[in-house]
Image 1 (cartoon, rainbow, N blue to C red):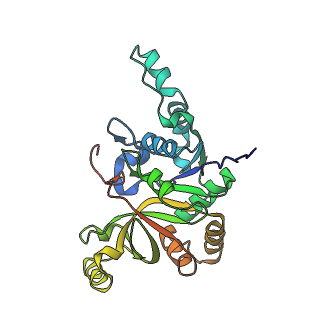
Image 2 (image 1 turned 135 degrees about the vertical axis):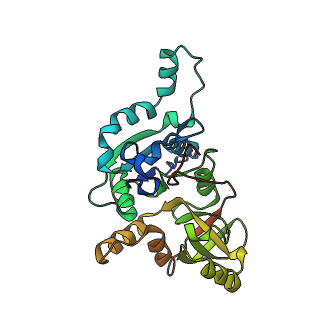
Image 3 (image 1 turned 90 degrees about the vertical axis):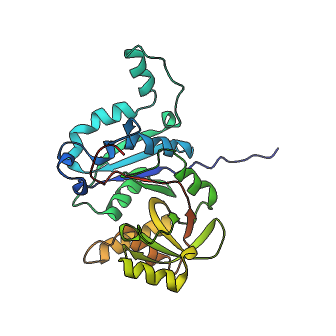
Length: 273
């Protein structure tokens, strides 16, 4: 009789180690990942997105300043929390969401915030093979971005999510230079937040079809994780995660998956997105 071995879905590191300084004074009181999106904290949408991949574990790497808020956040994101609240509030109980099967841990980031460190500490906590990384201030309210990245690419191969190139928006993003055609391309370079003139030069050199704007989702493999650990230890200043992945891509395959789903940046100042 043939037997098959179930392959566990990679767990998710949710990088939330910043202090939200881009959003102004209210980040002193509330981390930006709890900012509401369509009536729910952005972090709740990200946990739903993790659940939509089939993941059963996630870890939020948060800034130590927000540690006093963790018990409440853990309670409201726990499996069955919404149903318990609706019973207390005498409201109709909704069907369980995908997030109801995700166990979410919270760990404070050690030391000064840096995104590579967030990934390393989250992966160390999970002790898995591949891990997915989602940045907590980059919300997809449809919960489809991470499942797309997971389904379109091969486990064991690093992958990043991008959106179609927009020369006007490029100065706010890393711009991936891609090779190949079709729904999955290969990273060959990255330019971090180019000026308007530099973005126009990239279009002239490569064509807009070969350019993507980095979004806050990646698959990190054990080999890439080891590379990031070495890069963080050897550099005088820790490299930005996207630039470290681009450096890795010079000698290794890194897939690029494109989504047209708009993302919500919780780091922007103002009211509810």
